Amino acid sequence: MHFYKPQRPLIRVSPKFKFDYAQQPRTQQPSPNGLSWSHLPDRLRPYEISVNGKRQGVTKKKLDTPVAALAISKYKLFLCFLELLRSQKEIRKTLDILTEDLPNLSYGTCKQLATRYQEAWQQLKSEYFEQWTRKPDKLLEFKRIA
Image 1 (tube, rainbow, N blue to C red):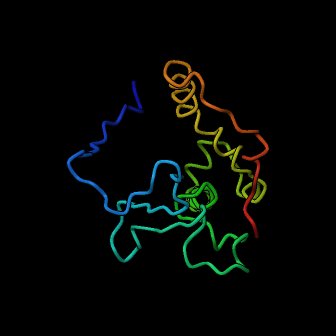
Image 2: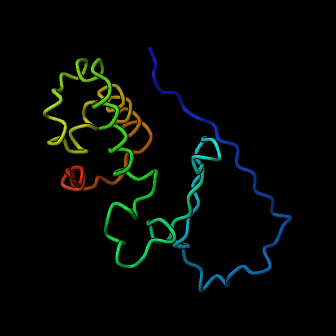
């Protein structure tokens, strides 16, 4: 049984169109800005603009706080998962997690609970992404900030 399947996104690029404000090749560099869309109703803000990996509009004082995290960031997804665990006894039972253990769970620990995903990801890396870089495990060991 396959739980994950390859997606085939449709990307359209036309060489006919020229961008009048394109930079010269010697000065090209990636933009620090980004735009992410989610399949959500408009009232839930289906898009977010980021600057240097942080939510646009966040004050300098709050740049290194959870307020600056994007909705699609590991931290925010982790918080959603913890809320799901808190509210769904059946899922906690399936994963063998006690309610009192929730404050001590790290992102890395929760990520390892997704065993089917981990197996699929390992297979994908070994078959297609052999040179995929591996980040230090310590970067996954963050917890919810109280």
